[in-house]
Image (cartoon, rainbow, N blue to C red):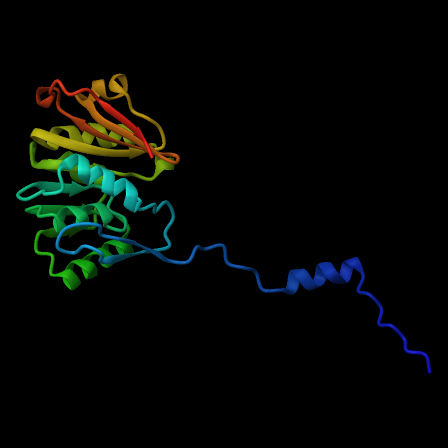
Length: 224
């Protein structure tokens, strides 16, 4: 008896089969970053799957805190677009007297509060708030260090600089992370100077300061 080969499915049948298959999720799996220095060194922070959430990479934070001198004892710090909390908790880990973390997404803010409780991080304060609104209402000269790392597609760089500038204490610094370089002309309207600038992949990161805090040290540009 001759075996009969099964008929191959038609192209229409293939299309029907594909349409009935369960759709694959495009949501990225949660991942982690780690605190790289201070009392909570190597502590891992879970990064939630949230639109626009892009934690500052470990190697960028390592360079940043080398610039800052590692020890932030007594500093008052503001992490205006906290997200995972990597910058704010890193500052607190290195001795900051105050680390205020702003996050308008309630779920992310709750995650930050849970981490604050787990670490018993008394210097950390978490506020579920819009960063621009909060900064515009804050007391002038309240912080020695302000972290600005807004979502790159939100066009918040200039508004954030404008809102943050009055909050700087004398000799204070603003960290700005962006998808492009901000040179002296770009930050001059906000009454700031570029002190440090570096690039890692597509990310530009800067330390900005008040002109009165300027020294004769030239600006430094580094590509990682």
